[in-house]
Image (cartoon, rainbow, N blue to C red; front, side):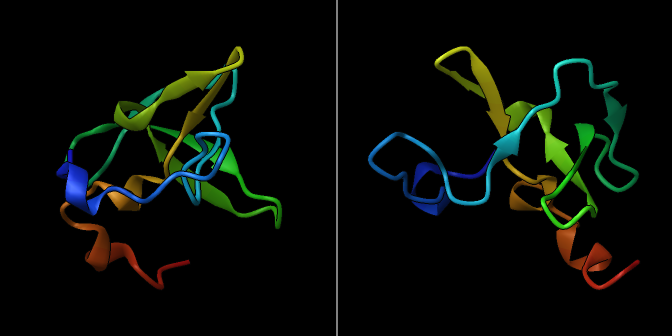
Length: 82
């Protein structure tokens, strides 16, 4: 995980920029690059994005996670790939 200085700032409700709702019945898998546990979720635009299970937080009974590229050491290798 990244250090506290590198984490995104939170809004007034405690939300982190870019976080998405972690699907309730998501099937965890592993990142092909770093081996971290991830879950796939669709964005509002319908694209699949990997969510990092390590960044999961629960607020008001809902689980949220950051996209995996926020903490993957090899994120740059995957940028721009379909």
